[in-house]
Amino acid sequence: MPVVEVQNLSHIFADGTAAIENINLQIESKEFVVIAGPNGSGKTVFIRHLNGLLSPTKGKVFIDGEPITKDIVNARRKVGMIFQDSDSQIVGQTVEEDVSFGPENLNLPPEEVSRLAKESLQAVGLAEYATRNPHDLSGGQKKKLAIAGILAMKPKIIIFDEPFAGLDYPGVVQVLQQIILLHESGHTIILVTHELEKVLAHANRLVIIYQGKLAENGRPGDVIGDCEKYGIRMPLRANEGVETLTWLK
Ligand SMILES: Nc1ncnc2c1ncn2[C@@H]1O[C@H](COP(=O)(O)OP(=O)(O)OP(=O)(O)O)[C@@H](O)[C@H]1O
Ligand SMILES: [Mg+2]
Image (cartoon, rainbow, N blue to C red; front, side):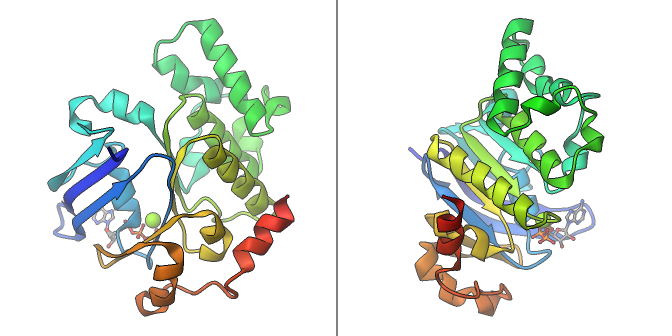
């Protein structure tokens, strides 16, 4: 059974904008799916349906075979989302408080919340920043904090919306390293990006959304040749992502 199943999903905003139209997609457990498409093509609107942040005008989303409308709290626990703007995701006065927010809302006992928060900060390399004000962190550190906040909820599926935007090269490498580790530790990864060269070597699937419709869906090697016709820049060299991987190790 797919972990994510999307059936005939459409979203029309109140002003009449048809942001996504009739999207069908199935994602299996432990896949690493990259979603690309030009600005305004509907990528963010699409992924926001996968944990119920947006409700469809038409169509359905299933997580582990259950419609997300049946138990939205459980769906949000299973599907963690890392927003493009890390500042908008900060909720605590300190780094540790920020990471504790999710597990606290699951009504876990305080010792368990504390354990999960410490573990998650450790996992992203922010343990020594626990008492800092999250707003004082760098862009890359804020992104890692957002990842830690999601990790503390123990989601199966983690969605990243443009995780590299605004990061310098070391920041990109660190965040990419985190994403690869999450995938290797068994999470299903869905990643929206314009920067295909950074991630494609790690992905097993490339989906292109164009003008609100699912235009391509297949193995990266099979889809990549069509990218330019959808206004997506081709990776400079076919093996550039592989070089990044080698460099990481
Ligand atoms: N709240 C809203 N009301 C009306 N239209 C909206 C709203 N949110 C998004 N849209 C429109 O929906 C379409 C898809 O937007 P979306 O944010 O999903 O694009 P995107 O593919 O994520 O683009 P980008 O690469 O720039 O992030 C756009 O035309 C956008 O203007
Ligand atoms: Mg977007």
